[in-house]
Amino acid sequence: MKIKLLAIGKTDDKNLQVLIQNYEKRLKHYIKFELEIIPDLKNVKNLSETEQKEKEGTLILKRVNPSDQLILLDENGPMHTSKEFSKFMQKKMNSGIKQVVMVIGGPYGFSNAVYQKAKNLMKMTGIDNLADRTIIQGSGGQLQRVAICRSLINNPDIIFGDEPTGALDSKSTREIMSILAEINKEGTTVMLVTHDVKVAAKTERILFMVDGNLVAQKKMLKYDEQQDDIKQREESIMKWLVENGF
View: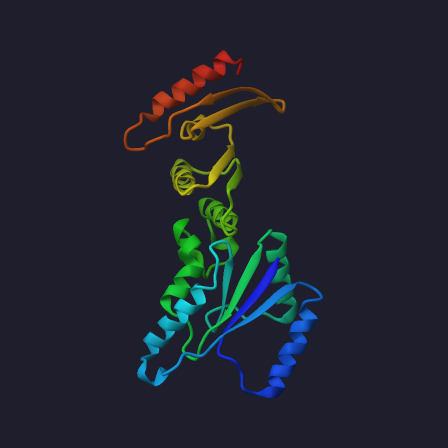
């Protein structure tokens, strides 16, 4: 994993500059690290606070890749001790994230566009309202969405889901499948393990496995919730399974 630190404006204090350079050298012995200073805006006297934040936000977002995890360093986030921060970063490393981008904003903080970028995945998976809650305050369906959101951080080509709708009620199951369908529409392959025919009926290709062996496979047309009869798809799958000894 690589850590990239973006900062608006360079310090003029030469002593601080030396300390930053020394610490940067030390960090590179332990992890890939890059510090990028975004130059201060010119003629800020003619800009309002909002305009300045928007211009700085544009410069920040130009330097963030779709697969990066964006962490904003400001007063709205939690405060960590050095040990807590170390554990936080270790979890990021263990999750397989390629690059974490941390950002120190300008004098007025971040624009709405930058905050939105940091929350986009949460919004897409319907958990943006959970941002300030602890893990024990989420329902089963919400926690499944958290898992999906986390899996999308690296902008993967394929997602593997092991019983992603297991132990969920029918409403939550439909919501999770809708999210996965939307992800698939955007170009990400979604591969699921399931014992639920209702889940399989919403997929395009089914692999039937017994004792770890591939027994048969069935191709389906892409499911259209508005036009397709889900019951007919389920019955077709059940008949196919029986024909293959299920």
